[in-house]
Image 1 (cartoon, rainbow, N blue to C red):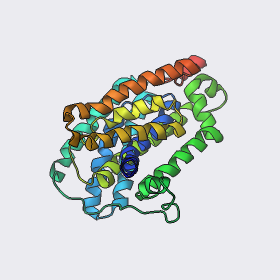
Image 2 (cartoon, helix red, strand yellow):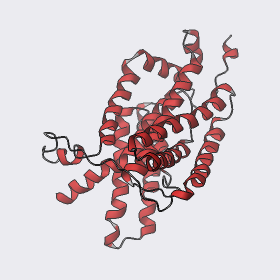
Image 3 (cartoon, rainbow, N blue to C red):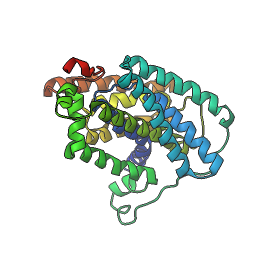
Image 4 (cartoon, helix red, strand yellow):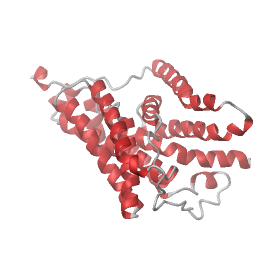
Length: 307
């Protein structure tokens, strides 16, 4: 039982960067924009948070900068996709390559440099003593608690506010939303910006909390797993938390299973093997429940066609 609790406790921080990225990507895709640049935004969030923390000694300032950088990169994709009507797939892939290359260039001087500050665990007294659940969920760092709150906020705004209704309407039928007086471009820009900020925050968590160091390419495909979680969650924030912690658990088991003599190469393949399996299961559930992705996902909206 102690081993299980230790694994599950480690699962929460391992899945938190995925959860943060997935929450943002759900909003982006709900608006009809496909952003494959999550990996690039996450890695830029990681290096910007790490470098700013080292320069200032303030972790929270590093986190803030990562959010701004992630949002700024997302606006590049928004301009290409919404204003220029460019191919969203190519724009997202270019954003990923830009982020990976630029982060490697900026981070050369930070390889092997220790982080000057770190967020430590902050137990929630009273809740921490609850058997099993307490040590797992309520003996974590502040950003984990923030991720809990953000999941609730994103769910509430998506399904219980006017903004959420407009966001989903734009993603399903932008021409109908436009005819109802909704500013399609504004909603899509805002959703894409939110997605970029969350991806940057997820990257910051990696470099200043989960593994407080800078390693080139440290996201290691996590941005692509975020995209898989977005589909697995059926574009719902409350389901994203399950998918994120599932992949977080797999990441933890990678290290826990190594002493058993299992090939490290096989263990490194585990997240991507399960990504394929999760996508297969999600596709089956989507078919069974007759649920599909937002109808306008990846399709540029030309207002002139509706006039």
